[in-house]
Length: 112
Image (tube, rainbow, N blue to C red; front, side):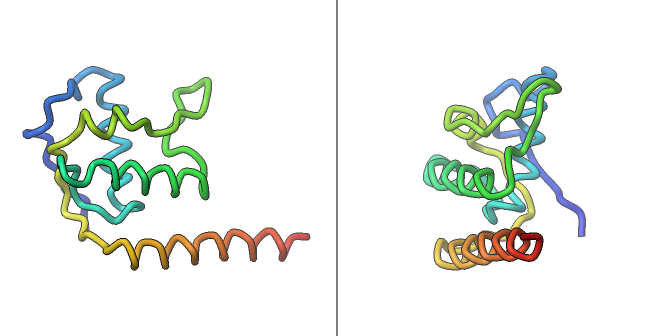
């Protein structure tokens, strides 16, 4: 299944190189954070989930010199982004985050 997205309702400049880097990051982040869109109502939750996933696996992007973590103002600027990703409840997302931490820990322990 392809990841489809729509940026037509986003006010941020996503056509510049930097803007596209943010847009691309957030589009692909919808898969990890299990939220298909960024809305006025959920943008803080979207950011919170990005923060959590980036702390487990590392930042979603690198600018060639340094790691770049998603910032709250970036998520807020992309209100209106929509993808075909299905939303997961907070409970389901938290369960999956717990499993990611456990998998990461088990990997470390296997190599210890």
